[in-house]
Image (cartoon, rainbow, N blue to C red):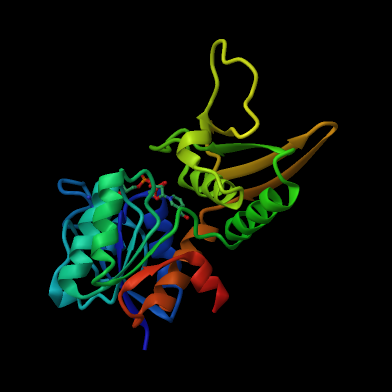
Length: 266
Ligand code: NAD
């Protein structure tokens, strides 16, 4: 039996690719697609707008119980992610969301809802980035304070939030490994007479240009040497297929918060 999924942010870069890959995957079935209120896709058939043959789904601006959705896969906006979490709670569905840039209040609401439904949030669904997170954590711990950490991320010019959720997740992993608070030690870009770098700083830098899908590099620098751990996403397929893998994995799990590392462990 295939998992019945709804895709939120259906017309976006990630939503479209997720729908395309899902349509080719016999283990999932796209039974609903959601866009923002007033979006030109709302009310149209997916087959007409997304150019996916064989779909009878009509794009909506909300989800209906008749769709019998088991898992909502969301790549939209912070507001969209919160709406879909509320939908999931109302419909008894699970939520897999890759949306980044949520405020502390929005994250709190998702945290509260995850007490009632299975929810997986990931700033990055690619297997490579999840390995990068693990390696960055290990390197931060093993190399120790003598190695200063700077993170550089590059994305396409359409990206809404900066720095990327992935850069923040890497910074969080490094801070945790060193027993430091990210809030106190993060430095977002530098400008003006900033003075010498403090050893505990974790520098985070966002570059925006062209159509770059996503690149992350973590630098560990000490006197006379520099270690670089990096990841390049060459297409959105790595994210979309990871999200579908997470959707299949989470279906039927008990309520709670899950991460991509739970999926990759199994
Ligand atoms: P995009 O701007 O191309 O697409 C977002 C889509 O969401 C748009 O079509 C927009 O109309 C729609 N939308 C807006 N409000 C909505 C609502 N309330 N309900 C439903 N849909 C709504 O953006 P994108 O590049 O596809 O990225 C979307 C999100 O996913 C961003 O937060 C991005 O950072 C994140 N992202 C995550 C990963 C990952 O692996 N976790 C990978 C790539 C992008």
